[in-house]
Image (cartoon, rainbow, N blue to C red; front, side, top):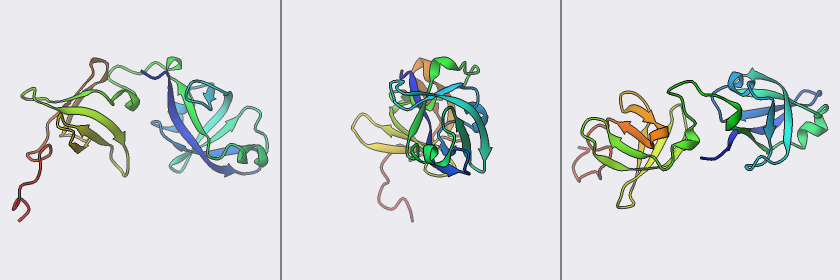
Length: 176
């Protein structure tokens, strides 16, 4: 498991006092506010103090230590900020999406193995799991109820209840 996880990306400045507007890659601005520092590298490089976080529309406004004007904030645009997973205790049943790739995707009813989680993405309102079958084919699975039954990240498995055809090739004439 990776120790440092992507949390947000600075996309622009906000105001003249050095705030940075960030696209959130974590649950919420409230979750991010639990951290006292962020890191500018995937291995924990370049820590920077997190003074304040507040929600702003579907983004977050960050006030970072030592970033006190628009020029300093502008220098951070494009920066991906990371959190240290050891600095947070997740509630029971919660998990980091970064821990899902590599998990077995299993039918909750009959135990059939559909494949291995390859990627987690959020191209729109819902999360999409990319599942790689044993033959190398990729399938896209919407991570929504009733299809997603249970995520057991610590056990390395995701239990699903797909509709017919979700993990198979379309047959000619299926869409008539």
